[in-house]
Image (tube, rainbow, N blue to C red; front, side, top):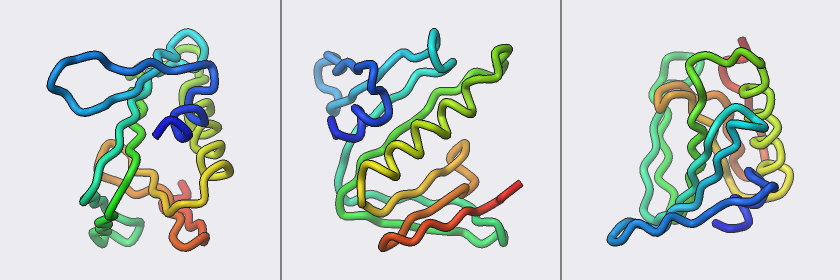
Length: 123
């Protein structure tokens, strides 16, 4: 989890100290990238999203690290989406595991399965 967090937030991240909560790493990058990010790991995961053909995509990894970008509704600088894409590219370049990028918990944007990257919804 720390390796992924270091790729997503190379400037540094913090660990949540909320008692009774699962381990959570995070970084406030609003000043530099226009968003905050949360990272947590787990096991026996379930993720689903709609792919570009309208078919429901499902993934049930034994272990996973989930990165959630908290994006602003209004981005006057226009940097949050390009900076998020750069962070995703760092994770893909820096880690070999299967991966998925899902927008708003609904729409599948990309997957990497057994090393093959596929972009969904190219527009």
